[in-house]
Image: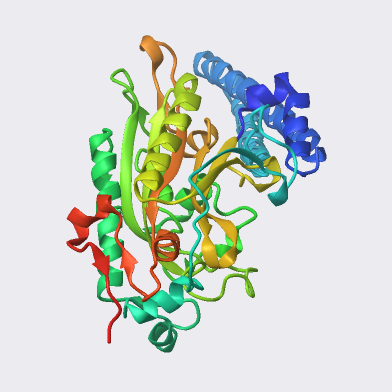
Length: 420
């Protein structure tokens, strides 16, 4: 949720952000009206409560002859207070609903536009070339007996798979490397729950435009998470944090679930776009003034991983219309996938400023002063999709795959060999 004070004091800034995202600025005007009604309802209620308290003292001090009339007035006043309290409840519910429809305020430097309007900030590495016709990751995975899509579909349906043998070992090695690097960087390792309550899912902003991509267990009223960002954001829900020693950093290793609604016909081959995958997600709570520096720190960690894995990539500044409701700025890192002759997203990292913290009521107390909302950030450090770029980039003509040196201590292999 955006800051209501900012909405009142600088509605034009909020409108510019909405326009930049491709959303209607009319929602800002509606929010201003709803906020004003809410504050007016609260004022009326507080005035009536004060009048009721004063009247109660009058009744207590009245004579026996005066009391019947005053008691009747007290009953009438009590009913008015009850109605005013209900008016506050209704006004607050409406204001919260309208305010929740306004997405986070994008930073001024974020490019305008949609999915295709990103800005490339930098590229790294040479585009891999081969003196043979390269195989795609699924063909390589089948040669290695590492990926079994057919049985995944048989057991669970389309876009499910088994990683087996060296495929399972490769993912475990990749995630273990990422976890160790996160620990070395001061992140607390976490294995979070993958089912969360509605207020946590909504608080992180995942029940907005992309709610149809979220799996829900209706009987239990719980949601399966598409990233451990969600439970990690909810971890400190309703708390006042001590940030006097610096930011709180967590690294969540979890299985993730996405229904990928509306994506049929896209990347249906292999494990690029699937319903279930594993991911190591970095999550940070910090002071708002440190959020941009922390954002760059997360990107640097992601780049270091990709460089050491020998992958060619580009870093893009995602356009406002493709940010998602919670992010004020997002960087994606896309690795080169040889058989697609294109860069494909492997990581993203978002600065959500105070948007999620307002929804989840997560605050800190700077220098003993009044509490303020923290800033939250998230970023991927490893996920199943990375296997796609690893297999295709490091393949050899005979179907074997050279294991990047940094992974060898975790995998125990230098080369992945085809299975006869």
